Image 1 (cartoon, rainbow, N blue to C red):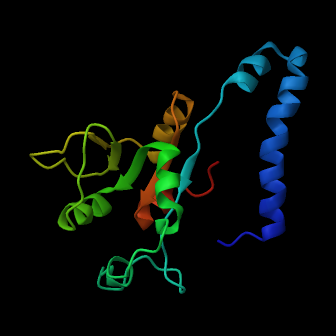
Image 2 (cartoon, rainbow, N blue to C red; image 1 turned 180 degrees about the vertical axis):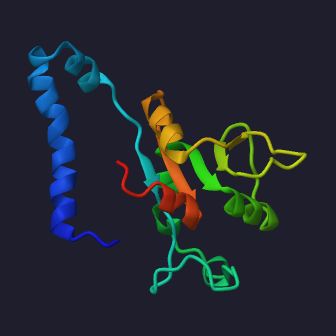
Length: 164
């Protein structure tokens, strides 16, 4: 579903104004003071897509993306990564990442959503999640930390649509 830019601008403004209003009117309800003072981590979808809106070719190939020379600044990705401390991805994206030679470490937390059991050997820093994305995201957003990068794939991103 596409949302008109004007509506997004209103929504973004509303999200900024709401905490300010809560801080100004915490005397109305004791719980408002607690809600207004708890910063919530953002879960941000940051993906590369082709001009027609797809991440991969119909056969799953990513050559249009992986075989390009990396521009200076690599599309701002290093700066974006420094603003996050965890990543959310689906099982197919995780499996494909392993096939492409991705490295995982305890220094970078990855939450992999899957209905299937994890592989026999799970890299350090990778945690498999079986609960709903909504419940998990709600809990994760209230924990201390930086923002969270929702990397994909399409099913995991689609399951989070309509949420803040």
